[in-house]
Length: 170
Ligand code: ADP
Image 1 (tube, rainbow, N blue to C red):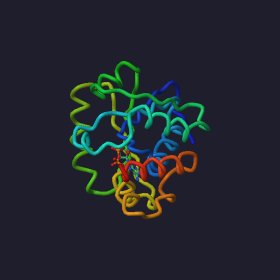
Image 2 (image 1 turned 60 degrees about the vertical axis):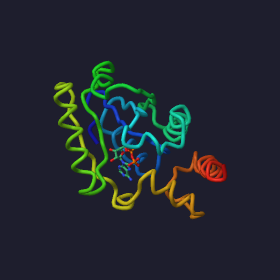
Image 3 (image 1 turned 90 degrees about the vertical axis):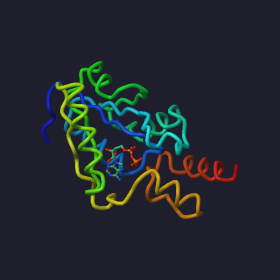
Image 4 (image 1 turned 120 degrees about the vertical axis):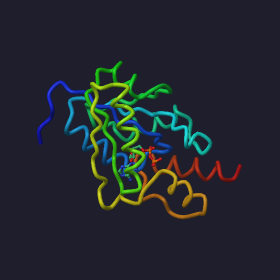
């Protein structure tokens, strides 16, 4: 595996909460770039369906990436293109699950390219086992009493399920 020297990548998302699918993309990015900054961002399409606070999401991601020396975790409520410039990032890494992700991701990548031409968006294909997985489906299945433990990273699994179950009862 070749690590691109002196390169910083940002890995943005809602991470509400982080799933094994997100973690796979972060782990693979950390093998490609010198430093990866996972950044919890506000997705205006999902603003009313958020369950976890930005601080909780950051804490969950930190616990899941504790074994990765070159991964940092942050949160930001502004423009991704500006954040990437502030951090000196050369790439934005996104995971692509299926064609259904493509149109939206393509639009975001082209917009970010206009806003910050110095940053390239790099797409990593989702692992076949995570193709169907999203934070929203985890929340839906858990709300209906299903077992979501296969979809959540081990360090946070119990806490996320407890918190989702509690939120559902409120
Ligand atoms: P979600 O759709 O789960 O709410 P986010 O908005 O947090 O996801 O997505 C952040 C990034 O992670 C996006 O690039 C998205 O395509 C990617 N991603 C989300 N789930 C997966 C998965 N199961 N496998 C690979 N990439 C994923």
